[in-house]
Image 1 (cartoon, one colour):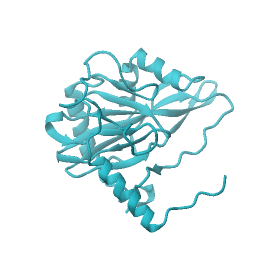
Image 2 (tube, rainbow, N blue to C red; image 1 turned 90 degrees about the vertical axis):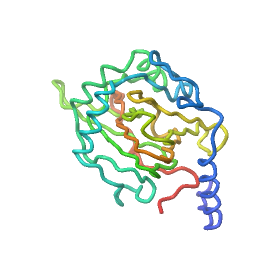
Image 3 (tube, one colour; image 1 turned 45 degrees about the horizontal axis):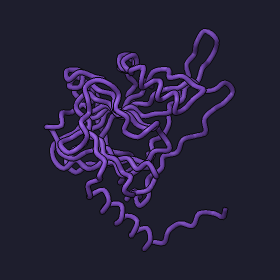
Image 4 (tube, one colour; image 1 turned 90 degrees about the horizontal axis):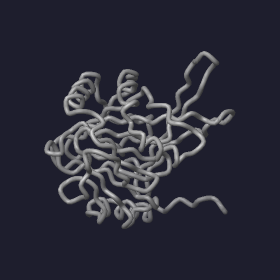
Length: 260
């Protein structure tokens, strides 16, 4: 195969127009919210087979409120130019927040059914908890994070038998806000990698978590139409196969989306 030919300015503009028309339209598959499938308060909900799940009530309402207060006090910043997403992500979030205590709280609460599903999706490694580096984000009215692929994170731990490396394979995203506090702001998935009618929207109740694969699953945080939405996000860690290091992970935007 030859090199990829970049689209012309006219083609790029049409892709952008198609993308924004798509995200402005409702999709037939919805989980949560007033018009979507009910998300139970017990048991795992599979959103995309082998790729995305909802975990009910991972944090209590009081824990969510405390985490929002903590994140706001720590400081929430807009995207920086060096990150490659300036002009794309408009939410504000923490930078360089290392919170091992939160990782130690959340990791053991991940249900066994989720661990089995995640390990089946990426065999030959075991889930080793969650990364201590967290992102707490606030979406004000109009804020969004257009189509992109999540990057993977790694962690090197010094143990009794030397250094051990862990790599994240899935994103854990926890809703910290009541649905009554904002309108819009669903997470939209495109399992085919294209903005088509396979899209699925997920609206999480407060304290529920969305778990989905990194790198290969195109998704977006749709715009908040009114109110304010807070989330917490972290990577689920896996033990890397011996002698194998993951390739560097590079931030990628979705089709029809480009930083402005």
